[in-house]
Length: 147
Image (cartoon, rainbow, N blue to C red; front, side, top):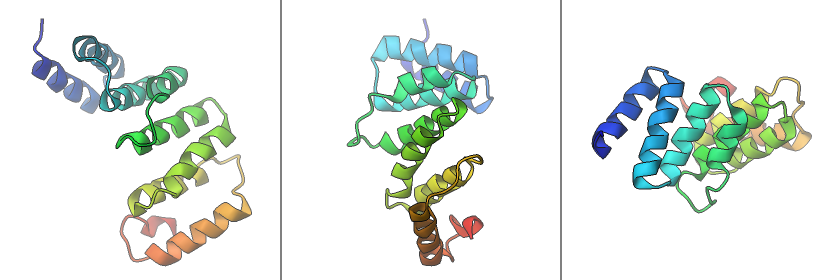
């Protein structure tokens, strides 16, 4: 059986090479050996999403608490999973958490993801938040593409 370090290295290599199903299998082996934690939950959620399993992606991240340092990552996975399931208001709710998080980079990701919900119109409140955000951070390379 592989050592824990070897499994983690294998997981990273598989994720980087976009071998999603294999990565899921290795993540599940790590969870069986070490137990579940928020980092593994997010990794599993991302891989399930990339493998075309949005319901499994949601299941992987659903228990991550708002106090976790992986919560915002979990909300991005959640938003993308809901988008894949065509549950656009639920996706917008998850992306809205990123918009309100305080990190300009993650806020930009949240706004970009909201705009990318192509069949959902932004609310007036979301448009105003986006305009204020772009104005405040227009010189930042993280958000320049939103202008």
